[in-house]
Length: 362
Image 1: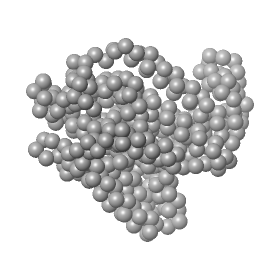
Image 2 (image 1 turned 135 degrees about the vertical axis):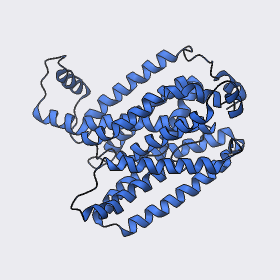
Image 3 (image 1 turned 45 degrees about the horizontal axis):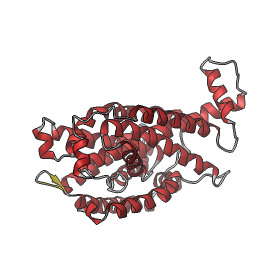
C-alpha cells in the first residue's frame, strides 16, 4: 500500500465516497441471491422460486404452504447451514481485514500466520483431552465449550505473534510471517499428536476440524456461535477510524489522538474471538481472510469504514458459494469446503505476492 493510499485513508477520510452505498447494496443483494441458491442446492433440489415462496409463507407474506418434506429440509438442514455459512464467512473476512489493518499489510491473514491453527489446536485438545476427562463423569463435551477453547487458542497465538513480531513499537512483517509459519507448524505437530492418541470417534471429529465443512450445521451451533459473531460485527465499526490512522504509522496515529494500544488490543481480541468461533463451528477454513479484503480494497479503496462492512458481506457470499460447489461437484457426496477455499485462495495469494514484489515482506 502506497503512502498516498494511506494518507487518503486517514482518520478524516470520508466513508461516503462515490459508489459506497451502491457497493454495499449490491453485496447485500449478492448475499441474498446466493443464500436462496444455497437453500435449494443439494441431493434434494428445490428451485429458487420455490425457496422464496416457502420463506415468504413462513413470514406471512404469501399463501404458499410448503410440503412437510420441503419444510423439514429447509428449516432443519438448509437454513441453519446457510445462516452459519454467512456468519462464518463474514467473521473470517472481517478478521482478515482487522489483521491486515493491525499489521499494515494486505498479506496478513489468520490462516497464514497461525491463528487458525492455534484455534484448531485448542478445539482439538478439547475434543480429545476434554472428552476423556468428562467421560469419567458420564457426560460429553458440550458444544458451547468449543468456541471458548478455540477463542483462547486463537487469542494466545495472536498475542504470541504480536509479541514476537513487534520491537520498539514497530511490527516487522517478515518476522510476522515467519513466526506465523513456525507457530502454525508447532500447532500442527501438536494436533497430529492428538490425532495419534485419539480413538475412532474422536478421529472423525478431528478430521472435520482439519478440513473444514458446513455439513454439521445445526440451530444449536448457530445459537452458540452467534454471540461471538455479533460481537465482531457490532464492534468492528468502532475500530475503523483507528485502523485508518494506523496506516500512517503508530507514532503518527498517536499524535493525532488515536488510542493506539486500545485499538491494537481490541483488534487482537476480536480477531481471536471471530477465528475461534469460526474454527469451533466449521473447522479450519483458509484464505477467506486474505482474498476478500483485498478484492474489496481493489474496488473500494483502503478506508476501513467501508472495507470492514463490505468484507463481511462479500465474505459471507464467497463462503456460501464455495459451500454450494462443495455440495454439487461430487454429489451425492460432499467435498470439505476447506479444500475449495485453499484451491482458490493459494493461487490468489501467490499472485498477490508476485504482484506486490518481494518488498511486501520487508
